[in-house]
Image 1 (cartoon, rainbow, N blue to C red):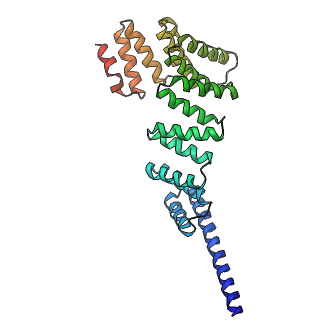
Image 2: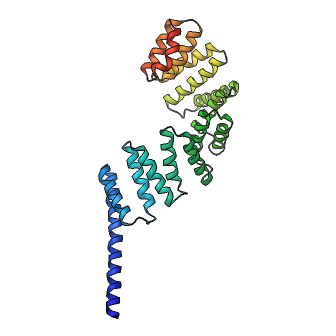
Image 3: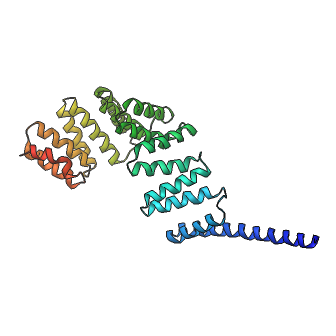
Amino acid sequence: MRKAIILLALICTGALQIAAQNYQDLCDKAFRCIEADSLDRAQDYIRQALRLEPSNPHNALLFSNLGTIQRRQGKTDLALESYTFALNFTPRSVPILMNRATLYLETGREDRARVDYSLVLDLDKDNTEALLMRAYIYMKARDYKSARADYQHLLQTEPTSFSGRLGLAIVEHKAGRLSVAQRILSQMIEAEQTGRQTTDKELATLYTTRAEVEKDLKQPDAALIDLEEAIKLDEKQAEAYLVRGQIYLQQNRKKQARRDFEQAIALGIPRNDLHHLLQECK
């Protein structure tokens, strides 16, 4: 009898070792398939591993990888479900929360994205991406006070952040604090003139953004100079043509305005968005 019990114990131990080995083998195969961009096979291996050991704590990583695969395949609802399952295992995982927040944002669910970014910031109060993205969500919702707070928090830890300073300038512009926005942008442009740190496209964005502020400050001549500089730096800066077209239209230079609006459309701005402006050019 004692021998039978020992034998049974050995058999059970061996079975557990085989199962554990199979689980790890399936995980390894899944990761190799992901690296090889064989996403369907990777999903099969992940699902086999999940069925084999449904309560294994390492399943958080499997569900997270499954979500990323599904996201790459455009299966957004399934990806969100997988990220949520992953968070059931590790609710304080910053990378998984960030993945789900980004996907929420990409699918237009800003409120849910904001909640996830807030959870990240509860865990990592200086997380740059979470601060930037939550500020963007606040700005879209016209909660300029909260957006400003996030940008200012970011700039306390990263004073030279291009995205942080530009975002703050845009918030001040939208909040009607035009002189403040202009000052921030001018400081950024002056800093670039003394020691270039940005790409041509980024610098063109600064000139275009300052031109928008100058337009609203009733400084069209200064705005046109900035827009010329922006287009010189990046001739594909659609927003520059749009703003210049708006200024030309205000000056009753309709032919030039229409030309710029058409160029903005050619560079990606939807024609429907500019329909009313084009009508005014007639």
